[in-house]
Amino acid sequence: MTRSGPPTTGTIVRYTGKHGLNAIRAAIVTADVRTLDPRGVEAGQVPALDSEWHLHLWVYTPSEALGGGFAEFNVPFGDEPGMWHWMPEEPAYKDWDNEPMSNRDV
Image (cartoon, rainbow, N blue to C red; front, side, top):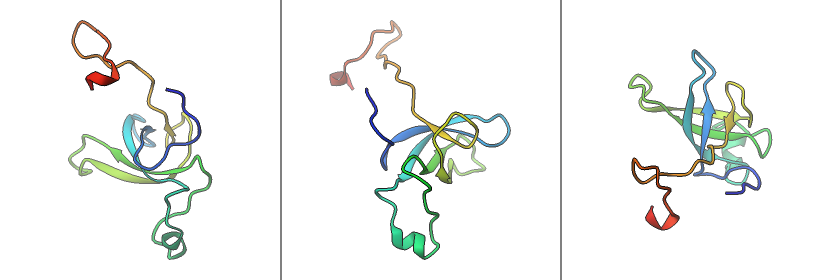
């Protein structure tokens, strides 16, 4: 898959935590520059995004204490803690023999 441009709302990306072990977690894009409601920004209900490569995310975690996830706002693209990056482009496997799946098998 060739990626052209930043992800859009609903895309799954990876987020590197800012605290502790800097764990890498799955996150879903909840807002990007095309879907962020400017009225919510003007009213102070949601933070603005600094660029098209900044995103609002819902970060998934197995922690019961965090209710399964938490919001992160205006998250920049990169490899450092507190940043998002693309999911790796790894093949999916349908069985233990490591036989790659085609898209039709999904």
